[in-house]
Length: 230
Image (cartoon, rainbow, N blue to C red; front, side, top):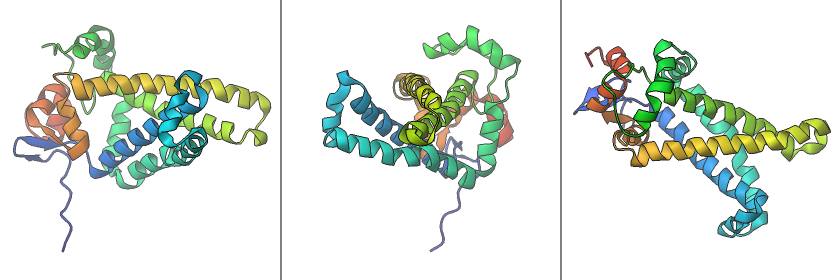
């Protein structure tokens, strides 16, 4: 039996538009689940006040093993999926993430707080695939993936690195997971609680988002991929 062909990005069907490929959805959840496991086991290992979390994993020593085992898929799997299976959509995401324009700069001080509080301004600068706030999230995700992976590797094998580099790795690792945890909390608020952004959760679970949501939040992207007016 032939496999159903994956829709093209921008396909409109039954009031929904295809926004994320299967590779993007898989990479998102692999990154999310592995980071949460690393966060919980890391807290159990290194933070005395939360050492009780270790019991959820069968003890501190098992938590240590899980932390090291999960570090590999966290560092590699999501990235490999995006590079191998993401194709053009991944390239466009990276291009948009690293391309900052005047409307992005204007969004940050003027609109990011009101958007966060659920007030979608009429004069909001038009967003492409992601808005300026989501670009910050993407940039921090990419940066912390690198800093956590590299610093974790140095901490894992301290005997093969200079002592000064090992000393630097610890605060870099701590600052990285703290930044990423803050971003995760914001991300969860927007996707689970925020009244006007919860629709985005469907996109990163099924690949499809409501057409009206795409029109109002990502009008440039909507026009570009569908050929329709937002």
